[in-house]
Length: 129
Image (cartoon, rainbow, N blue to C red):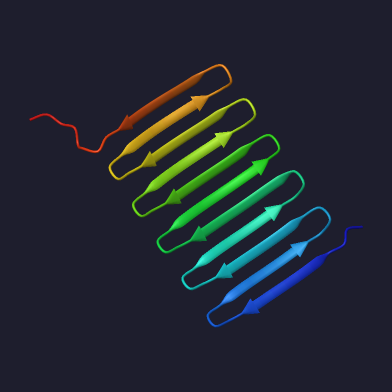
């Protein structure tokens, strides 16, 4: 039978909050901090890790799922915008990106043999007169 460990924390002068539950196989944790916000959740086993994050002064946002074969992640950052999605295995990586100050846009699919990508980069608006 698994042992269970449970820990809780509450602090203040303006808030920290934490919880952790762990066994031999699973760890589950939550965090809330502030002076102005952090927020986190993590679930991990020996095969899977799942995490969420929200930070601010002015925004980060992240989600990650990873196993021994696959990693899937999403990100949104700002001061002024990054946006990303990535799926990767040991054979394939697939990614999307949007960045700015003033624009990058990218899609990439890569394997050990092939790389396929689309990119648009600029620091000006392109157009016709």
